[in-house]
Length: 348
Image 1 (cartoon, rainbow, N blue to C red):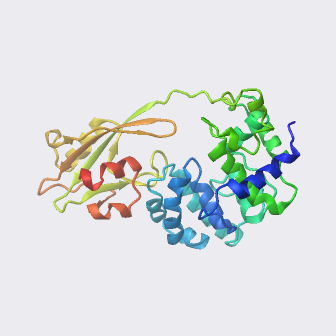
Image 2: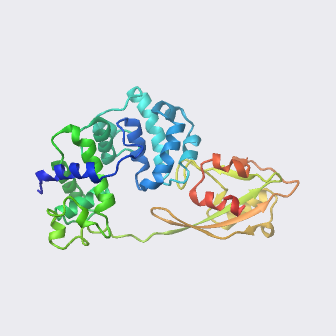
Image 3: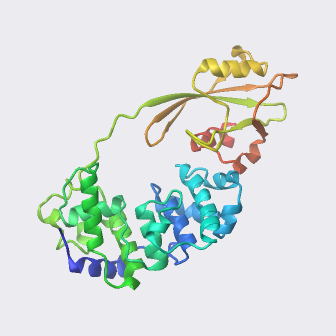
C-alpha cells in the first residue's frame, strides 16, 4: 500500500501559501460547512459563491432552514441544478432539529445518517468543523492519489474504490489541528493544479514524488469512466397566458424530473398537451410552437417542445392544481433552469 509520510506535510505547507483562502464558507461553523459542501457537489466554486450568501441570509441557521417551506428552499436553489440536493438539505435540517436537538453531530458516521450526506461529505464536515481525522475522497482527490502513487484501476470497480479509501486514510496528518488545512489542500490541489487536462506539474508540491509524472502517465491516470449512451427524452410544455398577462405554473411531483419545482404544464406527448389545452377552450390551431429547448441532465438529454397560447375570453376553468403568476413574480418560484431561460423577460 502506498504511503508517504511527507505527503501530508507537503500538502499542508502548500495550502497555507498557495491554496484557496477567503472563501465565505471557510469557517468552523458546521452549518456553514455542511451547506457549502452540499452546494459544491458537482458545482463550481464560482457558481456557489453567488448562491451561498443569499441562501445563508435567508436561512442563517439550521433551525431557520428546518422551519422553512420547501418552496422557499427550492426558489433560492433555482439555477444550481441537481435539485435533490436542496430537497435533501431541507430534510436533513429537520433531522438535525428533531434527532439531534438542533446541534450537528461531530462524528462522521452520525453525519452520514443525514439525508444527502455520503461518506466523503460527512468526512469534510467532520474535518473542517470538528477537526476529526477523517478523509474525503471526491473526484479531485481520487485524481491526486491516482497520479501521485500511480494507482491504476477501473473507476467503476468497488474494490479499486476501497483501495483509494485505504490509501487516503493512510495519508492523514497525525495532528488533528492540521485537518482543516489538509482537507482544504486536497480540494485545492485537485481543483487548481492537478487538473484532469493540462495539470500544472511545476506548481505541484508533489512533483518530485509523483509516480505518474516519473512514469510519464499523467495523461493516462486516473482512467476515465466509460460513458454510457445518454437517452433522449421528449417533453412538451404549454405556456398558457391569461388576460392579465399571468402565466400558469404547476408544481411538479415530489419524484422524477424537477421534483418539487414549479413548471409549465408538462407532457410526455403532444396528444396529452392538446387534450389539456382543449379543456381550457384552446384548439390546436391556436397553439404557437416556440423554439425547441435542449437541456442536458446527468443521465438524459431533454428535448423540449414548447407551445404557447393566450386564453380566450370567456374560457372554461377546468380543475387544475396550478397557480397564475405574473412575469415579475416568476423569480419568487423555484423554476427549472431551462424554464427560467425560456421565460426570461427578453423572451416574453
